[in-house]
Image 1 (cartoon, helix red, strand yellow):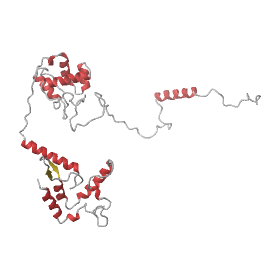
Image 2 (cartoon, one colour):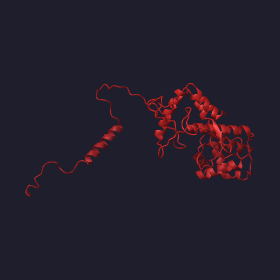
Image 3 (cartoon, helix red, strand yellow):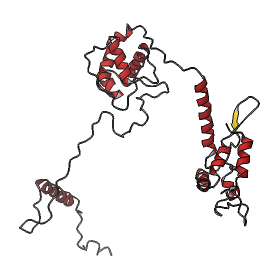
Length: 305
């Protein structure tokens, strides 16, 4: 790792340092020399009262990064901003933990520091071995309910359809699936549906002749995870379509275009029987809604006047 003092000195001693984008303007020291519309506070942390509005912060950081991208000392500034210093306990911290420097946000630099720490820890630690699956007593796995869940899980991928074919509600089916995962020594957080069914076949809970519906490119979870999710876990990158579970997409048919023009009679297309029925109902409704009181003038009230 580069020494912070050396990195800072290399940045300041560069002959293009005075042309940096975050330098103060000669006419107004509160704005940037690269863009007079961008204040110098755009590179520093927010020091106002209360919380900075999100849109204001995003616009400010975007303007600062745009100027940094065309800065002549961008590489040297980024190197210095990512250098670290160690505290009394030996923990490394960024020398510039706040603000925009080197075209990077403070959050980006912190994430890079955490990634370097993790890479150093993984490189020095011994390689972790994958624990072998410990199969428990399978006497409970041969019950009628668990066999029904396994058979349904081999045929369906949707949790509700699995519960329906197993003859139980969704909560009971999910509980049996979780129990089977634990019983077969699989990890609840990472075990897939294919792994659960393969382990069930190996242990004799399912016959080897059972036809298993494949998961496809995005595997389904063997059981609900321990974070409280009742439904299946969706793998990262799997496209999600907002449809009802178990409801197939309606076939998309192409409409037959109607030729423009009129029939030879010149009176337009003949109305269909359905249109005739609709016109008759409309006429009946209009007749029923006609007012019963006559609109013609009457002389009933003339004697009273």
